[in-house]
Length: 254
Image (tube, rainbow, N blue to C red):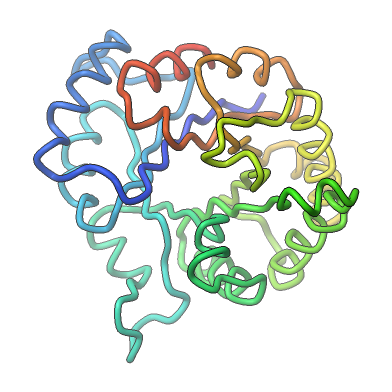
C-alpha cells in the first residue's frame, strides 16, 4: 500500500517573514500539534532556496518535509547561480523537484539535464521528484504517450535502481491555467508511467513507487483523483499557497 504524498510547490512565492504564520495556520487546520505527527499522508513543501533553512526548522516539528525546487548535478564548480546536493543536505533537505515544466519551458531544462540530475540525486541519497508531461499541442496531436515515454526513458536508462524515486505527471497545458486533466485522463497516464517503471524494475518494485498528479490540483478535484489506483498524491501549485486549501487536500488523502 503506497502512502499518499501531498507536495506543495510554492514556486517563486512567499518570504521568510511569512513562514511561521503559514505553518501555524496549516497545522491548525490539520489539528496537529508538536507531538502529533501525521502517519497516514506524507506532506512536503518545495520552497525557494532562501526559505529552505527556516522552513526546515519549523516544519520538522510536525513531520513535514521540505524540498528544493531544483539542484545541480555537479558536486561543486563554476556554476554561477546553482546549488549542489551537498549544500541542500547541509540544510537537512533530502528531496528536490527535477524537470518541472517551468524549468523546461523558461530555463532550458532538457531530458539530458534531467537525467544528469536524477542520476546524481540517487547516487548521493537525495530523493528526486521527477516531473514529466506533455504540452497542449502534444496532447491535441495524440502524442501524450510518446512524450511521457521519452521523458521517462531518458533518465531510466542511466539508473539501475529506483532508490527513493518519485515521479510527478504534469500535463503542462493544465499548470496555472485553471484547467485540469480529468481523473480518467490522469489515471491513463499514471498507468502508462507505472507500466514503464514495471518494465524497467519489475512489477513488485514499480508498485512501490509513488506517482503524483500535478496539473491544477485543488480541493475541488482531489477526491476524484484519489479514487484512481495509480494516483498516489498530488504536486500542488497555487492551492498550496493557501494553508486552509492545502490542509483540506491533505485531509482528503487520509
